[in-house]
Image (cartoon, rainbow, N blue to C red; front, side, top):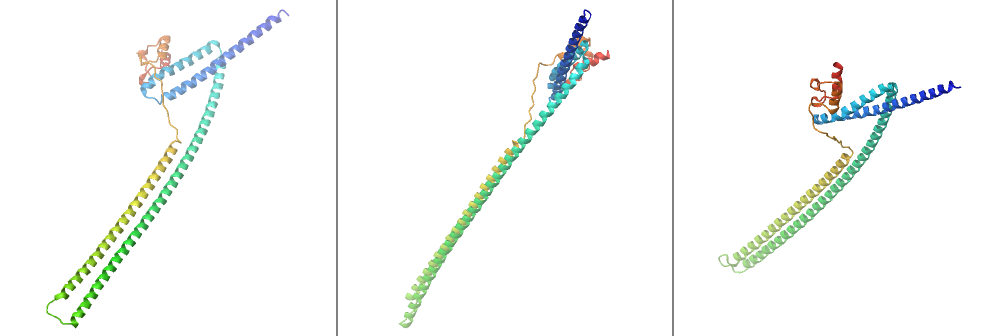
Length: 321
């Protein structure tokens, strides 16, 4: 019994130690996977920035790289490299699944938004068509009304001209009749030489007939002017109606275009800039790494933006020493 107690205690201690190591390795692996994922996202984001901004973002990328290296060294010192790698793979799979679900949800949301926007655009287009149709109908009605008014005015003018012509004809006929009666009376009585009264009457008859013809001409001119004004008014009304219809159709198309434009989503870019470049042209993490590993930065070729030296460049230079 005395020998079994230490053995049992030793086994419990060993099991607790293994559990602690496993937990430690799994924790480091999960953190490493998350840090790696963040670093990759930051690297992708950096590629979309100008070169001067890339150099500043590289500082943060190098911090992630240095953190990953520290985790790997800690796992190696504790002898939990296998546990770390296994946990890192599991965490990476979970991240990918979560990213896939988020991407699918984003696509669904985008599809719904696009569908709604298309529906709004369709409604706006229908409304534009209705407005254009109403405007065309109003234009047609106005043009028809103007044509009817012009026709009525022209008819009235022609009627006035006809009445004036009839009156002129009646006056001329009466004058001719008077001349004929007077001529007959003179022929039956004594005639004396010269034109005498007959010539004067004939002149008056001519004047009356001329005046009647002049009145008829003026009436005809007025009828033509009235008809021309009516035609001009009809043309102006038709043109105004067409302009109104065109404006309504254009406004409807603009509304449809704005609604369709809202279907789309905008892109945003941003970045936070940290302090300016330091001499030598290397990230702070790279400078610290170079001091730790005894690497001369002046002999290192930078692979970052504007030739900036990164942690990876320092590690490569150290491996070649």
